[in-house]
Amino acid sequence: MEIRHYKPSDEKDWVRCRALSFLETAYFDNVLREKEHYENPSIELVAVSEGKIVGILDAECDTTENRVCTGKKEKGAMIWHIAVHPDFQRKTIGEKLLKELEKIAAQKQVMYLEAWTRDDQWVRAWYEKNHFKLVSSYLHIFMEGNELPKIEGNKSEMQLVQGWAHYTGENKEAVKEKFKRVHECVCYTKVL
Ligand SMILES: CC(C)(COP(=O)(O)OP(=O)(O)OC[C@H]1O[C@@H](n2cnc3c(N)ncnc32)[C@H](O)[C@@H]1OP(=O)(O)O)[C@@H](O)C(=O)NCCC(=O)NCCS
Image 1: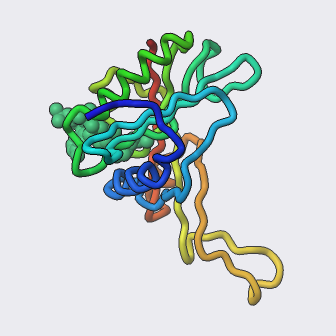
Image 2 (image 1 turned 120 degrees about the horizontal axis):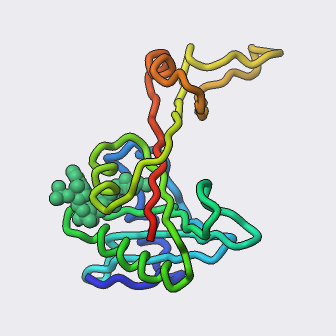
C-alpha cells in the first residue's frame, strides 16, 4: 500500500472510494460525482493498493487573506475528506494518511488541523484515538413531510418535499425529539 499525492487521472476512483466509504455513515447521502477542488493551497493524498484507490484525504490550508478553518487565529488546515474503502478499514490506512498529512502540513507551517464529522461513534473514536479534541458541535436537521415549514403563497403549485437546516442554539435535546433525522455535527482539532 502506497500513500501518494492525488493526480487528475485518479478522479473516477477517488469518487467511488469516497461514496463507498461513507455508505455506512451518517453522511450516506452526501454523494459527490466529481472531486472537489480548492481555492487555497491544499494537500490531497490517496492510498493505493494493487493499483486501486483505497483511501483518500483532502485538506485545505488557511492563507493570510483567506481563512478556511473556523477556530484559532494561527494557520490551520481543514480536513474536508478522509475516507477509507470499507474493505480496507481498520488496517491503519486512515492513520497513515493522517501521518503523511501531518508531515506535509508541518512543512507548510500549519499549526493545527480541523475536521468536522457527524455522530458516528466509531468515526469519533478514530479521531480521538489519533489525538484530536472535540471542541464544539451543532445539529444538522433533515426534514420531510409534516416536519417541513409551509411555503407562503400559492401552495397548490409549489410544496417543499425535503429540507435540511443547521441548528446552533442551546436547546438541542428538544430539537432531537421534534425531528426524526437529526445529526450532531462535531468539530475536532489537533495541534501539530
Ligand atoms: C474513519 C476512517 C477514515 C478511519 O480509517 P481506518 O483506516 O479504517 O482506521 P485506522 O485503521 O487508522 O484506525 C482504526 C480505528 O478506527 C476506529 N474504526 C475504524 N473503522 C471502524 C469500524 N468499522 N468499526 C469500529 N471502529 C472503527 C477504531 O477506533 C479503530 O481502532 P481498533 O481497530 O483498534 O478498534 C474510516 O474508517 C472511514 O473511512 N470511515 C468512513 C468515512 C468517514 O466517516 N470519514 C470521516 C468523517 S468526515
